[in-house]
View 1 (cartoon, rainbow, N blue to C red):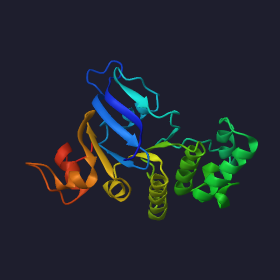
View 2: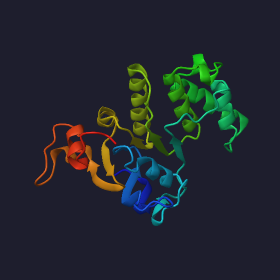
View 3: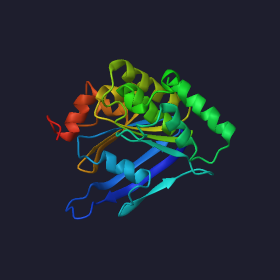
View 4: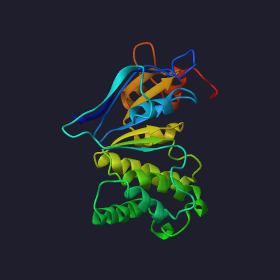
Length: 244
């Protein structure tokens, strides 16, 4: 059985001056070697949940726990570009690795490793602002991977990329999970979740509508399903034909 690294239990969160809760009783577990697909329409609470998991927001109810003898290293890849556009790709990597408590030799080794795994070598000396959308997305992920995370939180990681870059990024996620990383993958793209995730959580209006093993959810339960696709399952639970 995969070892749990991060859990959220009965999480509730309300933004200041907002009458409704952004998250209501949300629970999830991120385990080593598993990829959890986080699905929900715009405004469903996906980004808020990620912010709570990484500690940017403190929930008014419930708790987030890091498990294990040593607290797992958690890295976050936001939907927005999280680097300095006026620096080259390598300068960005050098800056962010300098924030870690590792030796100069280890820093150089980590930069070389992520440049190779994210295929950034030929763009190392190119200004980030002059790079394509696909290269920028790969740089975003490379910066997170400098931490060698146990848990990786991805928020819409393929927005604005071409099909080749999307295929590469999905393969990266698969390889990370196979290597033992716990991955949370938040996206609007059903086909991406079907391709890389073995666990699913459907969120809407801050509530968990469905969660569990993908194949089990597709088979349905008494009175629901079976569903011929993840999109059919998603529309059944969210009851929306248009995204807000």
